[in-house]
Image (tube, rainbow, N blue to C red; front, side, top):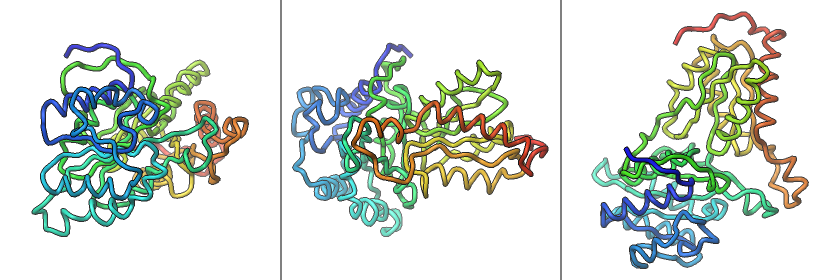
Length: 341
């Protein structure tokens, strides 16, 4: 494939453009989709390219907009519904959880709801608690919904294509902090399989299982730790539901030390679910307890100084890795032999 550098946001835009060119059933609807202030360069000039009948700037009504998308999907279209702030998508939870997630099951598989919901995580910038939340773990809980969170430009394009092609409701959650990340992306149309994690860095001493923006932080932490003689393996989850247990557990069985890093809250979060699965299925391979790096259980602050304390990153991941490696010397699990994958 021919590749060239694209930002994460440009990769999203290219996926949308190529799918809209390929399939007239694909359309986009959401608040502010004509405005770079809302969606950055991820939608730049799509309305000019495809017309405002297919790139629809909706009223400020998350529930109604999502309902329109679900109805269109039931009628055979392939809508992409954009919520420029995931916080306010909570107004559409009834549509997502009671309707989109259940129609296929309630009709015995005779109908499907091929809709993509694209909630955007906005954090930092002194925006406060109502504009800074990462709520992806809520939707992991719901049968009938798929949840993907790309961390690289390559996956931003490939997972969006896969989400649009999927016959099920897919939440495609992107993080605005990733929008300027740049990497080589193929010009051609391609997809990345939903439900398949990626090993971003191979290692032997500890495993870091990371989600979305925390993958970038984990790679940075891994580089720092390599200078200390610590060899970290980094797993990019990519898909929260379905979750690639096999790739995660194989790494855990190899290293015996695990840190799970998520940009959501700690309690009942994605990191908690992943940690539970590791404890259930690879406990005999653990040489220390699983560590979690996640947000504290308080609302996001408005003060920039407090934001610097509140948000987690590479420093927190590196410290957690050092901690689990140190605990192997004192914890009752120490000395357990790793189980071959």
